Length: 588
Image (tube, rainbow, N blue to C red; front, side, top):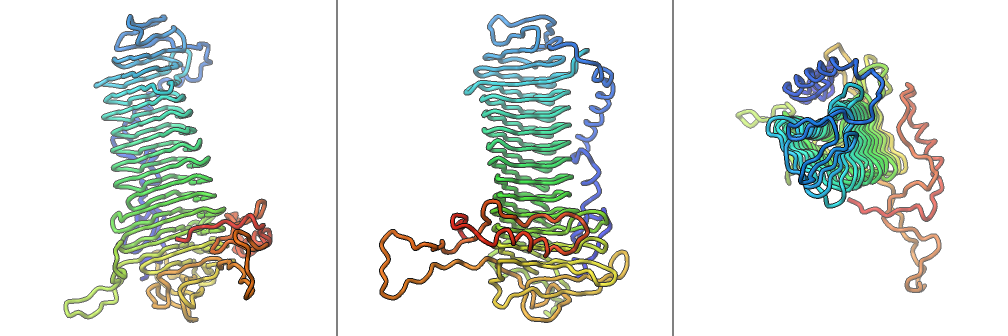
């Protein structure tokens, strides 16, 4: 069992029962994709360097300097005889029933489309805007309802050296057979009520800057080799629409910056061979829904996860026998304000919800759950059996005490010099299961004085019968010396244990606020039909704080280990819950 609790080097890859730092490539490759794609970006970077002088020049032109349509270049206003396209010699190009070759421009170009339009290039880009002599590139696309713009090409289907803005109520379909479907050297912004479908062999939607989807329609981004959505800065999804991102061989969603999902948006992401959502910074989901399914990791971000009034379902199947559904490194996981979270991981070594921190001067290693409903399940394999045999047998049938798997529902871990690992559950229903343990909080130190803790307020342990917080303590030889691993788990009995496989450890636990029971009526008393006694409360509810109440949330990384004091302060603001603030929830 020592392997689970050993402290990794900063860039070790997970192996065995050892939950450690991912491959260094996941942290250092800015592109975070295939070598083919990395090489392409280097080439693009050199090209951009050659045009830096023009980027620094003031913009004196307010129009595209020229356009090419189907290979023909125009320096002044032009159109075709059939009226399927026209350019005014300045910013604006109109498409109406266009069916032809690639469109290219220098400077700023506004493309508006009506009817059904098709742009095809079997040996290059579909629609491309590059910098002009006096003006930076910018591509704006807008269409009316019931209108479509179909762009198919071997290289990037829709691309700009600068930013790309897609607006309106129409439908844009972008398909690249060898490169990105939509690619911008600046930002990508998708607004309006229309639909955008981007399918690329490399990325679906990619930007060197931010990607903002503020759309009430549907945005679909699919990739084969790389990311469905790839933002080199921040990814912001809002507007209440639907976003579907997928990849066969890489992440469905990747961002070097923060990922923010809000405004009632519905996001669905999946990957067939990698983590679904991966990023260098934080993930925040506020009053929105997220469904993520991946391999190895469901959601993997380095700088914290916050779910605020969110509905989240996340799944992770084994990648090299390891899986974590919801994972952050060097920061905290916060689930609050009526969030509903369902996390499941399946693999020989798996965690459903996991945070850790091993590095000085970094936040992390804490899980805060308040006023929410959480289900966290980690399995060796998903089956109808009672779970896996964690021991192996020799040829004579004798049991060999060698553990074959490690599966923990909710897990927090920190190392010496860092605020100890904490799992805090406040006024919430939490169902946690693991073939090894339901919940564990552990801290590693040289002197054994640092303790990982589990704190529960306003939500008693309902199962197992007699369940309580029990201690764990063990002395282990780790990579950099002898350390004590000290913490807490949910279990039975009073003894401090020294193995996660101890029979006292609960493999399944339910922590929930007491059910509020309707007052009994007095014998012989008849209550008028349809009436409700004053003060009667809804049965089988999870109480949520009244408006303005202080919610227990993420602790600041101040070095203060006393999270209990902060939780107590939050509880003080919710001592009285208004009758209208009791919300019924279906118990899972």
